[in-house]
Length: 88
Image 1 (spheres, rainbow, N blue to C red):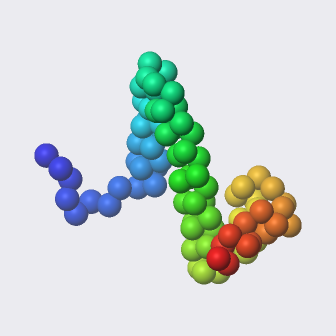
Image 2: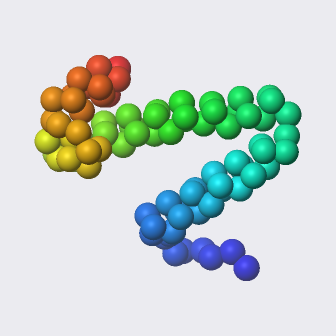
């Protein structure tokens, strides 16, 4: 039975995504090259999600310093890598 009215935690969703990705790797391992290309294309989707998350964090008042810390890079490196894409 589907759970209604219960918001899933970040950890629940994050864990599910990681399991899906691992399952895709196994599935693609025994598939056509087209499916390997489709798996690789997910990188673009993930990068777009990261840019959107950064945009929303900035809207909520987060600093480039805190974003850089979360990404394991300096404030300057985070700004250089994402500022133009966040603004677009």
